[in-house]
Length: 159
Ligand code: CTP
Ligand code: ZN
Image (cartoon, rainbow, N blue to C red):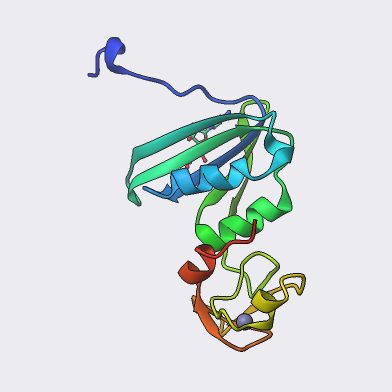
């Protein structure tokens, strides 16, 4: 048995959201996304890195004490770390679990990787990327038709 003195507990939260099953190493990047949302400025946030997980080996996890999550943050998560689970907590209980999927369409979330794309020349023009096919991690720019991978788009997030 583990002696009491060796157990370091991260407290459960009364109300808010747990972003669970973040692949180990991506937690810091997800924290940076959270930091870009002024709506979450007042939220109490706990970051856990490298937890043991039977399914993933190691995982990162973030707990946010906030009443709601900005929709744009969820869309960015779908780009940066699809597969994470959002667990909504109310009265200390997990009341909802949603696994974030890769969507068919990204609007105004990332810049095109083609420097000559009209959206890079005229930055006020919105970007749109459409998934090539269901299950694919490749997206086509609706303006210049350049195919970008999910990772490339995640590296070109708009501010
Ligand atoms: N949690 C929390 N505050 C609560 C309730 C749960 O912070 N009031 C956190 C726990 O610390 C844990 C996660 O939410 O990290 C637990 O989620 P749960 O779905 O109950 O756990 P599992 O069933 O083990 O998760 P899964 O099968 O999705 O891996
Ligand atoms: Zn383009």
